[in-house]
Length: 149
Image 1 (cartoon, rainbow, N blue to C red):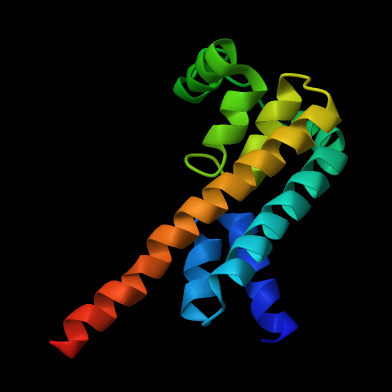
Image 2 (spheres, helix red, strand yellow):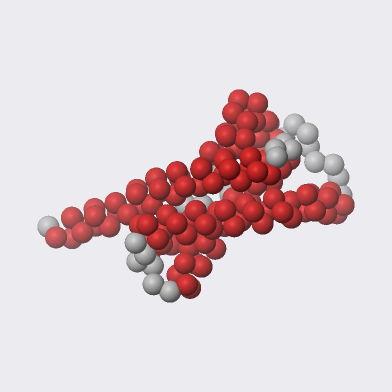
């Protein structure tokens, strides 16, 4: 394959994690290529966001017209995940419910050390990329099974 296919998988993963395996499948990449570039797409996004995250939080706060709600539904969910599971919970939920961007900023907001964020996000990204890719690539076998009958 070519780098444009790999870049498409990484870009899709940056926006929404499950979009990476779906893109890899639709472009005809092998399952190993899909797992690798889904993982790489999330890790590049996480690295970029934690590098620029503190500046971004300050910039948004500067332009915000009113203070954010302290007890919003979203804030309560984040605090609940943090108090129960810590960075491991945030990393595990990032591919499922959050985007790589949202998970990175959430981890930064709880002042998790950067190496811990990268470590747990890398493990989570690899596990979820493997699971999603395995499930999505099963669709090919299911389609072939029913098309032959």
